[in-house]
Length: 587
Image (cartoon, rainbow, N blue to C red; front, top):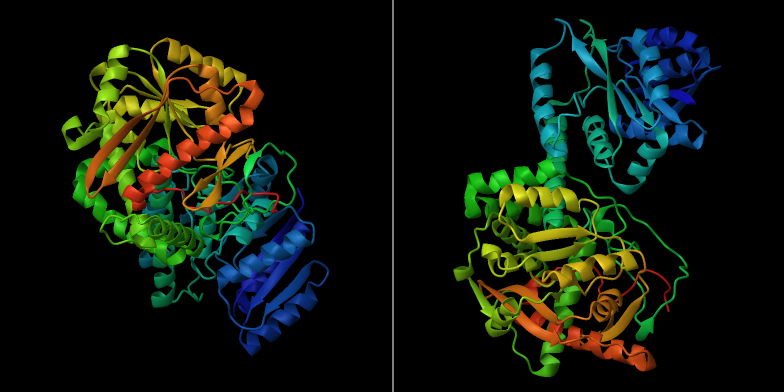
């Protein structure tokens, strides 16, 4: 471990002299960041830097930017100078520097973790500050859905620089007193462990604080608002089967079938609303089973109306801050309306906007909660194609259901899975299928829905699904998302007036399973739930002699039906990225 000391300082030149004198015997390099101190204090800092020039480097902000900004300057500089860890210490003398070796030993033993002091206060602590910390503790427990973070406000900590600077490059963090809490929560979201070392903290009688009562409390409140909205949004994404952060995809459209596998340039942007060239699936998931249980508990406590009311501030926040997502929605709606005009098709008489589109996305998550609990009963759902559905159940034969991210397939729980009529196996591209299954069984033990986690459409997946089909079970797979591992195995088909890439895998799988194939769309049309159950193919055949042409016909047929239902329920389209582009190989 190669560690340096980082000390942010604003006008604390007097206590800093004692801090530096205590730290000198450690022999660690120190970055002292003058955050725009007043002239007298700045001159004192110059003197201290000269006195300790063998191990202290003075960095200076031309004006006061805030404690968080000073720490970030120190962390970035430390990484650029080749250090692996940064030990943050406040300049005001509150920290017990005798505990520095303990923090460093903990960091040495756990180099990937964030090591933080856990304050032990004496009678010098102002009661207002102490009680205020407990308010933040509660918010942090909510934001992390855990009690793992025991204190998020202590500025006595050791940062792993690689992970911390990567986070700072991806997400704008608070520059003031909100920084310490926000970076700890966001690192926790990224899977960085936080370990705590108890340490004594004192408030000197002659000490001064730069905490601004109104401005800093406002900044901290806004920080918690952002974090809670971020958490709720991610849980909504998880409910609807998305990775925790939506990703966009960009590539110039082509036509026909593509099997290329040599990527060119690939860009990653880790922030939700700054999506770039990353594939929709290539991002770590966040949240937990506990988070979903909390959402379910909220639904039970508040009811549908109360829970729906919570959606407005969350959706409003992300609509306001989500330029890229907003643009994707607006692009889709504009394309849809232009196509409808060109075909002489009348769209439903309802307001259509990117905000309404995102709000409908949140409402679909609410419908999914209701579906999981069995609150959506058959009488609330109109089944279009009932004769086909009943015939398929009577037949007792296994079949493949091709779904999509248009609407919510969870509505099928109100139909075929009730009363043990049929078992439905849904393929999901997530590592957490087992936990979802456990949650479903906990909520509704009679559920006939089973989630099967897959990474790609390999031979083992085909064999497993073949067994399900032969046992008379149904298998559901969506046909409108490119492959997680083989994105460029696509078939281009006309969709809403332009070529769009559709995954090859689901259609190849359908031909291997040699079973009836149906389409299912669970929509909310003019406020009413409708499930469309449509025969697609008695057997989806792909003869070797003209395999590509046959694939093209089947995929185009699927795209035509998807397009038909988009025109019936425009706001139920939940692919919030440029659907008409791929990630790589711009043409």
